[in-house]
Image (tube, rainbow over all chains, first blue to last red; front, side, top):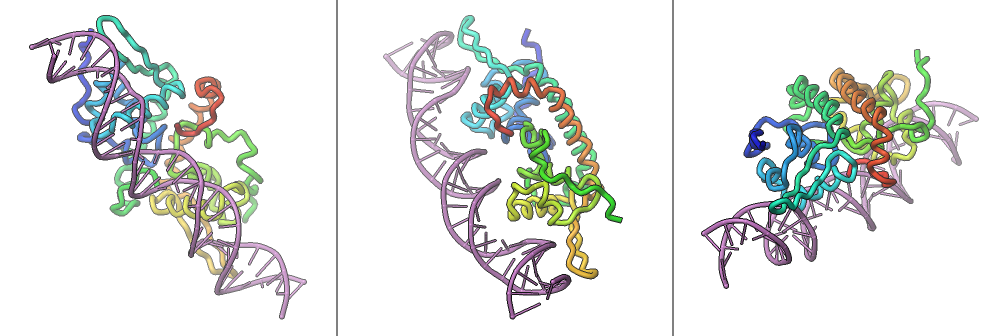
Length: 125
Length: 125
DNA sequence: AAGGTCGGTATCCAGCTGGATACCAAGACC
DNA sequence: GGTCTTGGTATCCAGCTGGATACCGACCTT
């Protein structure tokens, strides 16, 4: 049932524009978390893999924030053993559309973005 | 030639979702600044009117950031007297589309957003 | 000469963000 | 009994954000 491909080993390795976008959704890592949940629920330890540079505290904070705002649900299964799953809510899923639009815009204007901020990589300022 | 309507007296008076959005573009005030520049160039003192709750320092910071990232241009006219105009660049203008998409999404899901964050109005967490 | 407008700067400071490090209890495994 | 995994929490701290307040020179009007 968990035949889904595992998450990539490190999201930062790919050309992942989200940390460089002039946009921001939620806190620093929220958009990357959403991206990880795109194809189904994931466990905390699964999320830690692609987000290895995010400390557990920061990841927990981000997930709590997303939960508080209704984008993500957190369910605890005690079936055979403890298992905590995070999943997108319908609201969270609907949010992916404008987020994708923003990412596409960024991809289209990537060169201009890099030119403008002459060398200085700063995500939000 | 300056027959454009003046900016509204206070952007915070309208139902302006941007400070409540779970998104953020640039720094705290950037998206509201962009909105003010939508229909043409504006002077610093013009911008101060609708953004009266933004201190001059913060407004300058926001404009400098937008300029640094290529979204806004700053031109000094010394014609008859000193005049500084801020205008959207093509890049900045193109950015309005995904921003508008995000705002429309927020408008459509406004109730859910308010329900989720049970009472707590926090723009980004 | 006095005051207003324009376009900001200077200084200070509280509070939040986010990183590092360490630690923890419950259950599974050896 | 010891260790591993899971899903976190506790504590500390540096640095950034953004707000308040005051001030500034150049120019224009009266």
